[in-house]
Image 1 (cartoon, rainbow, N blue to C red):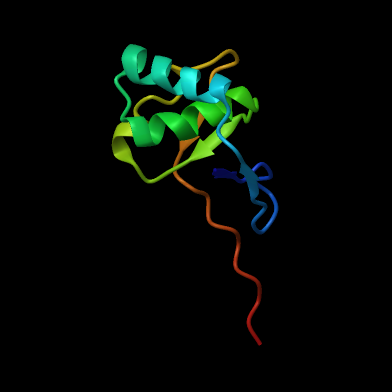
Image 2 (cartoon, helix red, strand yellow):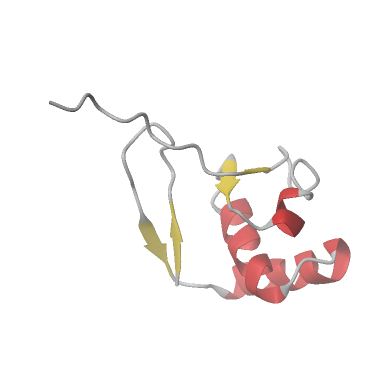
Length: 88
């Protein structure tokens, strides 16, 4: 089960997806061809299968892979904090 935030301009939008055979095989390719850890590869493979343009993480190793996976290239970046509203 994977949760993805598909709308970077919303507060927090999450969707839960079951891992399909296609995603699992994609994750295997990501591990073998891009030297990404299996626990990260399942997230990357899910994002690629769903054609998510951007994956956010604090993982420095995964951040280095930005733009090297998928067609079009998957952007992997640090999360962008939502602007804080005005306090009273």
